[in-house]
Amino acid sequence: MGISRLLPPVLNIYDFDLEAIKQQYLYLHFQVYDRECLDFIVASRNGGRQWMEYDVIEGGVANDRVIDTIEDYMRGRMSAERALEELSKHQPNNQICVLNQEVIDKHLHFIQSIKG
Image 1 (tube, rainbow, N blue to C red):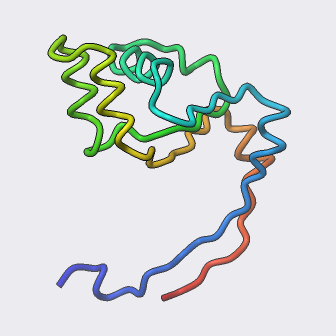
Image 2: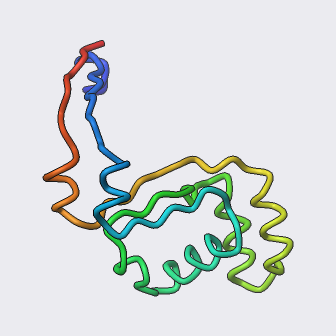
């Protein structure tokens, strides 16, 4: 019996003032899997550090649904146009990456915990 069966689930709720963050910090948002997003993902996976230019980055996760396409493009098995065509079939599963501790300290506020 795993520990998850012994403890009830807990949902922690936070307020994250993204509108204030957009105005006060270096914020990058990829709304869709487009060429800019594809190039950013590939550069990062190849050791690039362009992400260090930002305080917050928001966009689609390169998860199991899209990683095969990205890897095929990176290995030259697929053109950028074909990769973008494949990626366009997926609604991005959004993530927010906070790269600046000050953003968390000033704009992430605990609201409550709800036990299941």
